[in-house]
Length: 539
Image (cartoon, rainbow, N blue to C red; front, side, top):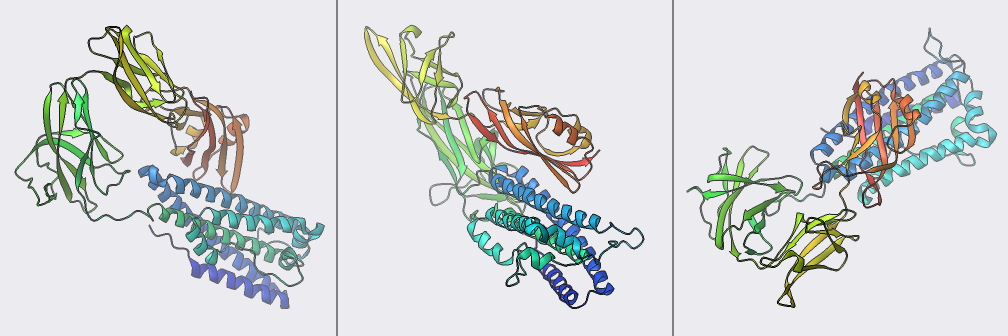
Protein backbone atom coordinates (compact mmCIF):
# COMPACT_ATOMS: atom_id res chain seq x y z
CA UNK A 1 0.00 0.00 0.00
CA UNK A 2 1.01 3.63 -0.41
CA UNK A 3 2.10 5.61 2.67
CA UNK A 4 1.87 9.26 1.48
CA UNK A 5 2.44 12.11 3.93
CA UNK A 6 -0.71 14.26 3.27
CA UNK A 7 1.44 17.40 3.05
CA UNK A 8 -1.25 19.66 1.43
CA UNK A 9 -3.68 18.88 4.27
CA UNK A 10 -1.00 19.64 6.85
CA UNK A 11 -0.24 23.00 5.23
CA UNK A 12 -3.94 23.88 5.10
CA UNK A 13 -4.42 23.13 8.82
CA UNK A 14 -1.43 25.30 9.76
CA UNK A 15 -2.61 28.14 7.51
CA UNK A 16 -6.17 28.16 8.91
CA UNK A 17 -4.87 28.23 12.48
CA UNK A 18 -2.54 31.15 11.70
CA UNK A 19 -5.36 33.11 10.05
CA UNK A 20 -7.68 32.59 13.01
CA UNK A 21 -4.95 33.54 15.45
CA UNK A 22 -4.38 36.79 13.56
CA UNK A 23 -8.11 37.56 13.59
CA UNK A 24 -8.25 36.73 17.27
CA UNK A 25 -5.55 39.31 18.01
CA UNK A 26 -7.75 41.98 16.42
CA UNK A 27 -11.17 41.11 17.79
CA UNK A 28 -12.34 38.24 20.05
CA UNK A 29 -15.85 37.92 18.68
CA UNK A 30 -18.27 35.05 19.10
CA UNK A 31 -17.84 34.23 15.44
CA UNK A 32 -14.08 33.88 15.83
CA UNK A 33 -14.50 31.62 18.87
CA UNK A 34 -16.98 29.49 16.92
CA UNK A 35 -14.49 29.32 14.08
CA UNK A 36 -11.86 27.96 16.45
CA UNK A 37 -14.27 25.22 17.52
CA UNK A 38 -14.90 24.39 13.86
CA UNK A 39 -11.16 24.21 13.19
CA UNK A 40 -10.60 22.11 16.30
CA UNK A 41 -13.29 19.67 15.18
CA UNK A 42 -11.77 19.53 11.70
CA UNK A 43 -8.29 18.85 13.01
CA UNK A 44 -9.78 16.18 15.30
CA UNK A 45 -11.26 14.46 12.24
CA UNK A 46 -7.90 14.74 10.52
CA UNK A 47 -6.26 13.17 13.57
CA UNK A 48 -8.65 10.22 13.33
CA UNK A 49 -7.72 9.81 9.66
CA UNK A 50 -4.00 9.98 10.47
CA UNK A 51 -4.41 7.39 13.22
CA UNK A 52 -6.10 5.05 10.75
CA UNK A 53 -3.38 5.68 8.18
CA UNK A 54 -0.62 5.05 10.72
CA UNK A 55 -2.39 1.92 11.96
CA UNK A 56 -2.45 0.60 8.39
CA UNK A 57 1.31 1.15 8.11
CA UNK A 58 1.93 -0.72 11.37
CA UNK A 59 -0.28 -3.58 10.13
CA UNK A 60 1.69 -3.78 6.88
CA UNK A 61 4.94 -3.54 8.83
CA UNK A 62 3.87 -6.39 11.14
CA UNK A 63 3.06 -8.56 8.11
CA UNK A 64 6.41 -7.70 6.57
CA UNK A 65 8.16 -8.62 9.84
CA UNK A 66 6.36 -11.98 10.03
CA UNK A 67 7.19 -12.79 6.38
CA UNK A 68 10.84 -11.71 6.46
CA UNK A 69 11.86 -11.14 10.08
CA UNK A 70 15.59 -11.46 9.40
CA UNK A 71 15.55 -8.38 7.18
CA UNK A 72 12.72 -6.38 8.78
CA UNK A 73 13.43 -6.84 12.51
CA UNK A 74 15.66 -3.78 13.04
CA UNK A 75 13.33 -1.35 11.25
CA UNK A 76 10.22 -2.91 12.84
CA UNK A 77 11.58 -2.45 16.36
CA UNK A 78 12.33 1.21 15.54
CA UNK A 79 8.76 1.61 14.26
CA UNK A 80 7.44 0.32 17.57
CA UNK A 81 9.67 2.86 19.33
CA UNK A 82 8.16 5.61 17.14
CA UNK A 83 4.67 4.53 18.17
CA UNK A 84 5.65 4.60 21.86
CA UNK A 85 7.16 8.10 21.53
CA UNK A 86 4.09 9.39 19.72
CA UNK A 87 1.66 7.81 22.18
CA UNK A 88 3.46 9.37 25.13
CA UNK A 89 3.29 12.96 23.81
CA UNK A 90 -0.22 12.51 22.40
CA UNK A 91 -1.53 11.41 25.80
CA UNK A 92 0.18 14.40 27.50
CA UNK A 93 -1.41 16.87 25.06
CA UNK A 94 -4.80 15.22 25.56
CA UNK A 95 -4.45 15.52 29.34
CA UNK A 96 -3.75 19.26 29.07
CA UNK A 97 -6.76 19.73 26.77
CA UNK A 98 -9.05 17.93 29.20
CA UNK A 99 -7.68 19.97 32.11
CA UNK A 100 -8.33 23.29 30.35
CA UNK A 101 -11.87 22.25 29.32
CA UNK A 102 -12.63 21.23 32.90
CA UNK A 103 -11.31 24.51 34.34
CA UNK A 104 -13.44 26.40 31.82
CA UNK A 105 -16.66 24.74 33.06
CA UNK A 106 -16.68 21.67 30.82
CA UNK A 107 -18.65 21.09 27.62
CA UNK A 108 -22.17 22.48 27.24
CA UNK A 109 -24.25 19.38 26.30
CA UNK A 110 -26.69 21.48 24.24
CA UNK A 111 -24.19 23.40 22.09
CA UNK A 112 -21.18 21.11 22.26
CA UNK A 113 -19.04 24.15 23.06
CA UNK A 114 -16.78 24.82 26.01
CA UNK A 115 -18.95 26.73 28.47
CA UNK A 116 -16.47 29.58 28.97
CA UNK A 117 -14.73 29.28 25.61
CA UNK A 118 -13.59 32.92 25.80
CA UNK A 119 -11.90 32.53 29.21
CA UNK A 120 -8.35 33.88 28.81
CA UNK A 121 -7.19 32.97 32.30
CA UNK A 122 -7.24 29.16 31.96
CA UNK A 123 -4.39 28.77 29.47
CA UNK A 124 -2.46 31.61 31.13
CA UNK A 125 -2.73 30.00 34.55
CA UNK A 126 -1.76 26.57 33.25
CA UNK A 127 1.16 27.38 30.95
CA UNK A 128 2.37 30.94 31.71
CA UNK A 129 2.00 31.52 35.43
CA UNK A 130 4.33 29.91 37.98
CA UNK A 131 7.26 31.10 35.80
CA UNK A 132 5.81 29.17 32.87
CA UNK A 133 6.91 25.81 34.31
CA UNK A 134 4.35 23.65 32.50
CA UNK A 135 4.70 25.64 29.30
CA UNK A 136 8.45 25.13 29.30
CA UNK A 137 8.00 21.43 30.08
CA UNK A 138 5.57 21.06 27.17
CA UNK A 139 7.92 22.86 24.81
CA UNK A 140 10.81 20.58 25.86
CA UNK A 141 8.67 17.47 25.47
CA UNK A 142 7.69 18.49 21.92
CA UNK A 143 11.30 19.27 20.98
CA UNK A 144 12.61 16.02 22.51
CA UNK A 145 9.94 13.92 20.81
CA UNK A 146 10.74 15.55 17.46
CA UNK A 147 14.44 14.78 17.84
CA UNK A 148 13.87 11.24 19.17
CA UNK A 149 11.63 10.47 16.18
CA UNK A 150 14.20 11.86 13.74
CA UNK A 151 16.97 9.88 15.43
CA UNK A 152 15.19 6.64 14.51
CA UNK A 153 16.03 7.33 10.85
CA UNK A 154 19.29 6.84 9.00
CA UNK A 155 21.28 9.99 8.22
CA UNK A 156 19.96 10.54 4.68
CA UNK A 157 16.32 9.90 5.58
CA UNK A 158 16.69 12.07 8.69
CA UNK A 159 18.03 14.97 6.63
CA UNK A 160 15.07 14.73 4.24
CA UNK A 161 12.55 14.42 7.06
CA UNK A 162 13.87 17.43 8.99
CA UNK A 163 12.89 19.79 6.17
CA UNK A 164 9.23 18.68 6.07
CA UNK A 165 8.73 17.45 9.63
CA UNK A 166 5.38 18.79 10.87
CA UNK A 167 6.16 18.52 14.58
CA UNK A 168 8.20 21.54 15.64
CA UNK A 169 8.21 24.59 17.90
CA UNK A 170 7.28 27.62 15.78
CA UNK A 171 5.75 31.05 16.13
CA UNK A 172 8.60 32.64 18.08
CA UNK A 173 8.01 36.29 19.09
CA UNK A 174 11.03 38.55 19.78
CA UNK A 175 11.38 39.30 23.48
CA UNK A 176 8.78 36.74 24.56
CA UNK A 177 9.02 33.13 25.64
CA UNK A 178 7.30 30.46 23.57
CA UNK A 179 4.74 29.70 26.27
CA UNK A 180 3.92 33.42 26.67
CA UNK A 181 3.48 33.92 22.95
CA UNK A 182 1.29 30.87 22.58
CA UNK A 183 -0.87 30.86 25.73
CA UNK A 184 -0.88 34.23 27.50
CA UNK A 185 -4.39 35.73 27.54
CA UNK A 186 -5.49 33.28 24.83
CA UNK A 187 -9.13 32.09 24.93
CA UNK A 188 -9.38 28.52 26.09
CA UNK A 189 -10.94 27.34 22.82
CA UNK A 190 -7.92 28.67 20.91
CA UNK A 191 -5.47 27.01 23.33
CA UNK A 192 -7.29 23.67 22.99
CA UNK A 193 -7.21 24.02 19.21
CA UNK A 194 -3.46 24.67 19.33
CA UNK A 195 -2.86 21.48 21.32
CA UNK A 196 -5.08 19.54 18.88
CA UNK A 197 -2.94 20.94 16.08
CA UNK A 198 0.21 19.71 17.84
CA UNK A 199 -1.42 16.28 18.09
CA UNK A 200 -2.01 16.44 14.34
CA UNK A 201 1.61 17.44 13.75
CA UNK A 202 2.71 14.56 15.97
CA UNK A 203 0.64 11.93 14.14
CA UNK A 204 1.89 13.24 10.80
CA UNK A 205 5.50 13.08 11.99
CA UNK A 206 5.00 9.57 13.36
CA UNK A 207 3.54 8.43 10.04
CA UNK A 208 6.42 10.06 8.16
CA UNK A 209 9.02 8.22 10.24
CA UNK A 210 7.31 4.84 10.15
CA UNK A 211 6.72 5.08 6.38
CA UNK A 212 10.43 5.77 5.84
CA UNK A 213 11.37 2.87 8.13
CA UNK A 214 8.96 0.63 6.22
CA UNK A 215 10.45 1.54 2.85
CA UNK A 216 14.01 1.21 4.20
CA UNK A 217 13.72 -2.57 4.73
CA UNK A 218 14.38 -3.31 1.07
CA UNK A 219 15.87 0.06 0.17
CA UNK A 220 19.44 -1.20 -0.21
CA UNK A 221 18.66 -4.63 -1.68
CA UNK A 222 20.31 -4.92 -5.08
CA UNK A 223 18.34 -6.25 -8.02
CA UNK A 224 19.91 -9.26 -9.72
CA UNK A 225 19.69 -10.04 -13.38
CA UNK A 226 21.70 -13.23 -13.68
CA UNK A 227 21.60 -16.54 -11.86
CA UNK A 228 23.77 -19.64 -11.96
CA UNK A 229 23.56 -22.84 -9.93
CA UNK A 230 26.74 -23.48 -7.94
CA UNK A 231 27.98 -26.36 -5.79
CA UNK A 232 30.37 -25.34 -3.01
CA UNK A 233 32.00 -28.03 -0.89
CA UNK A 234 34.80 -27.88 1.72
CA UNK A 235 36.46 -30.76 -0.14
CA UNK A 236 35.71 -33.72 -2.39
CA UNK A 237 37.60 -36.27 -0.31
CA UNK A 238 35.87 -37.95 2.62
CA UNK A 239 36.42 -40.92 4.90
CA UNK A 240 34.49 -44.13 4.49
CA UNK A 241 31.48 -44.15 6.79
CA UNK A 242 31.27 -40.36 6.87
CA UNK A 243 28.88 -38.07 4.93
CA UNK A 244 29.74 -35.84 2.01
CA UNK A 245 28.38 -32.35 2.57
CA UNK A 246 28.14 -29.45 0.15
CA UNK A 247 26.18 -26.24 -0.35
CA UNK A 248 24.04 -25.90 -3.48
CA UNK A 249 23.01 -22.34 -4.20
CA UNK A 250 21.95 -19.91 -6.90
CA UNK A 251 24.50 -17.12 -7.18
CA UNK A 252 23.02 -13.65 -6.42
CA UNK A 253 20.51 -15.24 -4.09
CA UNK A 254 18.36 -13.98 -1.20
CA UNK A 255 19.43 -15.59 2.06
CA UNK A 256 16.02 -14.92 3.66
CA UNK A 257 13.96 -16.56 0.90
CA UNK A 258 14.59 -20.22 0.24
CA UNK A 259 14.70 -21.77 -3.28
CA UNK A 260 13.99 -25.48 -3.76
CA UNK A 261 16.86 -27.92 -4.41
CA UNK A 262 16.46 -31.44 -5.83
CA UNK A 263 18.80 -34.30 -6.69
CA UNK A 264 18.08 -36.72 -9.54
CA UNK A 265 19.07 -37.81 -13.05
CA UNK A 266 18.74 -35.23 -15.82
CA UNK A 267 15.98 -35.58 -18.44
CA UNK A 268 16.68 -34.66 -22.10
CA UNK A 269 15.35 -31.15 -21.32
CA UNK A 270 18.67 -30.31 -19.61
CA UNK A 271 21.14 -28.93 -22.18
CA UNK A 272 24.81 -27.98 -21.80
CA UNK A 273 25.84 -24.37 -22.42
CA UNK A 274 29.07 -23.05 -24.04
CA UNK A 275 30.59 -22.20 -20.64
CA UNK A 276 30.71 -25.84 -19.58
CA UNK A 277 27.67 -25.61 -17.34
CA UNK A 278 23.97 -26.05 -18.09
CA UNK A 279 21.33 -23.75 -19.57
CA UNK A 280 18.64 -22.36 -17.35
CA UNK A 281 15.16 -23.74 -18.11
CA UNK A 282 12.08 -21.51 -17.85
CA UNK A 283 8.61 -23.02 -17.68
CA UNK A 284 5.08 -22.22 -16.57
CA UNK A 285 4.95 -25.79 -15.25
CA UNK A 286 6.54 -26.76 -11.92
CA UNK A 287 7.46 -30.26 -13.20
CA UNK A 288 11.16 -31.00 -12.58
CA UNK A 289 13.55 -31.93 -15.44
CA UNK A 290 14.74 -34.89 -13.31
CA UNK A 291 14.15 -38.62 -13.03
CA UNK A 292 13.45 -39.88 -9.47
CA UNK A 293 13.91 -36.45 -7.82
CA UNK A 294 14.78 -36.21 -4.10
CA UNK A 295 14.29 -32.93 -2.26
CA UNK A 296 17.27 -31.43 -0.40
CA UNK A 297 17.02 -29.51 2.87
CA UNK A 298 17.46 -25.73 2.38
CA UNK A 299 18.60 -23.30 5.08
CA UNK A 300 18.90 -19.52 4.60
CA UNK A 301 18.81 -19.83 0.80
CA UNK A 302 21.46 -22.57 0.65
CA UNK A 303 20.80 -26.25 -0.09
CA UNK A 304 22.49 -28.62 2.35
CA UNK A 305 23.60 -31.83 0.66
CA UNK A 306 24.33 -34.86 2.84
CA UNK A 307 25.33 -38.09 1.08
CA UNK A 308 26.40 -41.27 2.77
CA UNK A 309 29.92 -42.49 2.03
CA UNK A 310 29.03 -46.18 2.39
CA UNK A 311 31.44 -47.46 -0.24
CA UNK A 312 34.81 -46.20 -1.44
CA UNK A 313 35.33 -44.68 -4.88
CA UNK A 314 34.42 -41.66 -7.01
CA UNK A 315 30.76 -40.53 -6.75
CA UNK A 316 28.86 -38.19 -9.08
CA UNK A 317 25.50 -36.48 -8.67
CA UNK A 318 23.21 -34.11 -10.60
CA UNK A 319 20.22 -31.96 -9.70
CA UNK A 320 18.38 -28.67 -10.18
CA UNK A 321 17.52 -25.55 -8.20
CA UNK A 322 13.90 -24.45 -8.72
CA UNK A 323 12.94 -20.79 -8.26
CA UNK A 324 9.46 -19.33 -8.79
CA UNK A 325 9.36 -15.74 -10.04
CA UNK A 326 6.75 -13.20 -8.96
CA UNK A 327 5.12 -13.58 -12.41
CA UNK A 328 4.47 -17.28 -11.76
CA UNK A 329 7.20 -18.57 -14.11
CA UNK A 330 9.43 -21.38 -12.79
CA UNK A 331 13.16 -21.29 -13.47
CA UNK A 332 15.32 -24.40 -13.19
CA UNK A 333 19.10 -24.18 -12.74
CA UNK A 334 20.82 -27.55 -13.36
CA UNK A 335 24.03 -28.47 -11.48
CA UNK A 336 26.39 -31.38 -11.09
CA UNK A 337 29.17 -32.38 -8.70
CA UNK A 338 31.32 -35.23 -7.53
CA UNK A 339 33.17 -36.46 -4.47
CA UNK A 340 35.56 -39.24 -3.51
CA UNK A 341 35.10 -41.73 -0.69
CA UNK A 342 38.34 -43.12 0.79
CA UNK A 343 39.06 -45.59 3.62
CA UNK A 344 39.01 -43.85 7.00
CA UNK A 345 41.79 -43.61 9.55
CA UNK A 346 40.15 -41.57 12.30
CA UNK A 347 36.71 -40.18 13.00
CA UNK A 348 35.98 -37.01 14.94
CA UNK A 349 32.38 -35.82 14.75
CA UNK A 350 30.09 -33.83 17.02
CA UNK A 351 26.71 -35.40 17.72
CA UNK A 352 25.00 -32.07 17.03
CA UNK A 353 26.79 -30.78 13.84
CA UNK A 354 30.17 -29.04 14.02
CA UNK A 355 29.04 -26.35 16.44
CA UNK A 356 29.80 -26.12 20.15
CA UNK A 357 27.62 -23.91 22.35
CA UNK A 358 28.86 -21.87 25.28
CA UNK A 359 27.35 -22.97 28.59
CA UNK A 360 26.31 -26.46 27.45
CA UNK A 361 27.84 -29.92 27.83
CA UNK A 362 28.38 -30.50 24.11
CA UNK A 363 28.61 -34.27 23.39
CA UNK A 364 31.45 -35.19 21.01
CA UNK A 365 32.31 -38.68 19.74
CA UNK A 366 36.01 -39.41 19.20
CA UNK A 367 37.23 -42.78 17.93
CA UNK A 368 40.01 -44.44 15.92
CA UNK A 369 39.16 -47.66 14.06
CA UNK A 370 41.10 -50.64 15.43
CA UNK A 371 42.20 -48.80 18.59
CA UNK A 372 40.63 -49.33 22.03
CA UNK A 373 38.72 -46.33 23.29
CA UNK A 374 40.96 -46.19 26.37
CA UNK A 375 43.95 -45.58 24.08
CA UNK A 376 42.36 -42.66 22.21
CA UNK A 377 43.56 -39.19 23.28
CA UNK A 378 41.57 -36.06 22.39
CA UNK A 379 42.58 -32.50 23.20
CA UNK A 380 41.49 -28.96 22.31
CA UNK A 381 43.74 -26.56 20.47
CA UNK A 382 42.60 -23.15 21.65
CA UNK A 383 39.64 -22.26 23.85
CA UNK A 384 37.80 -25.01 25.71
CA UNK A 385 38.39 -28.41 27.23
CA UNK A 386 37.22 -32.01 26.75
CA UNK A 387 35.88 -33.99 29.68
CA UNK A 388 35.34 -37.75 29.48
CA UNK A 389 31.65 -38.76 29.75
CA UNK A 390 30.16 -41.96 31.15
CA UNK A 391 29.16 -43.29 27.69
CA UNK A 392 32.78 -43.44 26.51
CA UNK A 393 32.64 -40.19 24.58
CA UNK A 394 33.51 -36.64 25.58
CA UNK A 395 31.79 -33.45 26.68
CA UNK A 396 33.16 -30.26 25.14
CA UNK A 397 33.08 -27.20 27.42
CA UNK A 398 33.72 -23.82 25.76
CA UNK A 399 33.54 -20.20 26.91
CA UNK A 400 34.49 -17.86 24.03
CA UNK A 401 32.93 -17.51 20.53
CA UNK A 402 35.20 -18.34 17.60
CA UNK A 403 36.75 -21.57 16.38
CA UNK A 404 38.69 -24.40 17.97
CA UNK A 405 40.17 -27.73 16.91
CA UNK A 406 39.92 -31.19 18.40
CA UNK A 407 43.19 -33.07 17.86
CA UNK A 408 43.15 -36.86 18.06
CA UNK A 409 46.05 -39.15 18.82
CA UNK A 410 46.22 -42.87 19.62
CA UNK A 411 48.57 -45.07 21.65
CA UNK A 412 49.88 -47.65 19.19
CA UNK A 413 52.72 -50.00 20.08
CA UNK A 414 53.78 -47.74 22.92
CA UNK A 415 53.87 -44.63 20.77
CA UNK A 416 51.48 -41.68 20.62
CA UNK A 417 50.59 -41.30 16.95
CA UNK A 418 48.66 -38.26 15.56
CA UNK A 419 45.50 -39.49 13.80
CA UNK A 420 43.73 -36.32 12.69
CA UNK A 421 41.90 -33.23 13.79
CA UNK A 422 38.59 -31.42 13.26
CA UNK A 423 37.65 -27.76 13.54
CA UNK A 424 34.56 -26.64 15.41
CA UNK A 425 32.72 -23.34 15.54
CA UNK A 426 31.96 -21.97 19.00
CA UNK A 427 28.71 -20.04 19.28
CA UNK A 428 26.46 -18.56 21.89
CA UNK A 429 23.15 -20.27 22.46
CA UNK A 430 20.54 -18.71 20.12
CA UNK A 431 17.94 -16.47 21.71
CA UNK A 432 14.70 -18.19 22.66
CA UNK A 433 11.29 -17.28 21.28
CA UNK A 434 9.29 -14.97 23.55
CA UNK A 435 5.85 -16.32 24.49
CA UNK A 436 3.28 -15.78 27.17
CA UNK A 437 2.50 -18.97 29.08
CA UNK A 438 4.51 -20.86 26.46
CA UNK A 439 1.62 -20.99 23.99
CA UNK A 440 1.61 -17.78 22.00
CA UNK A 441 4.28 -15.57 20.49
CA UNK A 442 2.37 -12.47 19.45
CA UNK A 443 0.00 -11.26 16.75
CA UNK A 444 -3.70 -10.89 17.37
CA UNK A 445 -5.58 -12.09 20.45
CA UNK A 446 -8.85 -11.73 22.28
CA UNK A 447 -9.11 -9.76 25.51
CA UNK A 448 -10.09 -12.97 27.32
CA UNK A 449 -6.97 -14.72 26.09
CA UNK A 450 -4.68 -11.95 27.39
CA UNK A 451 -6.57 -11.74 30.68
CA UNK A 452 -6.01 -15.48 31.32
CA UNK A 453 -2.26 -15.41 30.74
CA UNK A 454 0.10 -15.58 33.72
CA UNK A 455 3.48 -14.40 32.47
CA UNK A 456 6.39 -14.46 30.00
CA UNK A 457 7.96 -17.80 29.05
CA UNK A 458 11.04 -17.96 26.75
CA UNK A 459 11.06 -21.14 24.64
CA UNK A 460 13.81 -22.76 22.59
CA UNK A 461 12.00 -25.90 21.44
CA UNK A 462 13.48 -25.63 17.92
CA UNK A 463 17.04 -25.51 19.26
CA UNK A 464 19.10 -28.53 18.23
CA UNK A 465 19.58 -29.64 21.85
CA UNK A 466 15.87 -29.24 22.62
CA UNK A 467 14.29 -27.03 25.24
CA UNK A 468 16.67 -25.13 27.53
CA UNK A 469 16.13 -23.57 30.96
CA UNK A 470 15.78 -19.80 30.55
CA UNK A 471 15.42 -17.49 33.55
CA UNK A 472 13.38 -14.33 33.06
CA UNK A 473 15.08 -11.40 34.81
CA UNK A 474 12.78 -8.52 33.92
CA UNK A 475 10.69 -6.90 31.21
CA UNK A 476 8.38 -3.95 30.54
CA UNK A 477 4.70 -4.26 29.65
CA UNK A 478 2.99 -1.45 27.72
CA UNK A 479 -0.81 -1.51 27.58
CA UNK A 480 -2.65 0.87 25.27
CA UNK A 481 -6.30 1.25 26.31
CA UNK A 482 -8.15 3.67 24.09
CA UNK A 483 -6.31 6.97 24.49
CA UNK A 484 -4.44 5.86 27.60
CA UNK A 485 -0.99 4.28 27.62
CA UNK A 486 0.36 2.40 30.63
CA UNK A 487 3.95 1.23 31.02
CA UNK A 488 4.82 -1.17 33.85
CA UNK A 489 8.17 -2.71 34.77
CA UNK A 490 8.10 -6.35 35.90
CA UNK A 491 10.70 -8.57 37.56
CA UNK A 492 10.64 -12.33 37.07
CA UNK A 493 8.41 -14.25 34.64
CA UNK A 494 5.01 -13.84 36.33
CA UNK A 495 2.95 -10.70 35.66
CA UNK A 496 2.82 -8.47 38.73
CA UNK A 497 -0.45 -7.33 40.26
CA UNK A 498 -0.50 -4.00 38.44
CA UNK A 499 -0.21 -5.75 35.06
CA UNK A 500 -2.88 -8.29 36.03
CA UNK A 501 -5.24 -5.44 36.94
CA UNK A 502 -4.60 -3.46 33.75
CA UNK A 503 -5.03 -6.57 31.57
CA UNK A 504 -8.65 -6.70 32.56
CA UNK A 505 -11.14 -4.79 30.47
CA UNK A 506 -9.14 -4.75 27.22
CA UNK A 507 -11.23 -3.97 24.17
CA UNK A 508 -10.98 -4.31 20.43
CA UNK A 509 -8.28 -1.98 19.10
CA UNK A 510 -6.25 -1.99 22.33
CA UNK A 511 -2.67 -3.30 22.37
CA UNK A 512 -0.63 -5.40 24.78
CA UNK A 513 3.15 -5.12 24.30
CA UNK A 514 6.06 -6.77 26.15
CA UNK A 515 9.52 -5.24 25.52
CA UNK A 516 12.96 -4.77 27.09
CA UNK A 517 12.93 -8.47 27.98
CA UNK A 518 16.09 -9.61 29.78
CA UNK A 519 16.70 -13.33 30.30
CA UNK A 520 19.55 -15.56 31.44
CA UNK A 521 20.39 -18.87 29.79
CA UNK A 522 22.62 -21.83 30.66
CA UNK A 523 25.71 -19.71 29.88
CA UNK A 524 24.77 -17.45 32.84
CA UNK A 525 24.85 -14.37 30.60
CA UNK A 526 22.01 -11.88 30.53
CA UNK A 527 20.67 -11.00 27.11
CA UNK A 528 17.82 -9.11 25.50
CA UNK A 529 15.28 -11.08 23.45
CA UNK A 530 12.70 -9.90 20.89
CA UNK A 531 9.53 -8.09 22.01
CA UNK A 532 6.04 -9.53 22.02
CA UNK A 533 3.05 -7.61 20.67
CA UNK A 534 -0.68 -8.32 20.56
CA UNK A 535 -3.47 -6.41 18.88
CA UNK A 536 -6.80 -7.03 20.63
CA UNK A 537 -9.41 -8.10 18.07
CA UNK A 538 -12.39 -8.96 20.31
CA UNK A 539 -13.49 -9.64 23.87
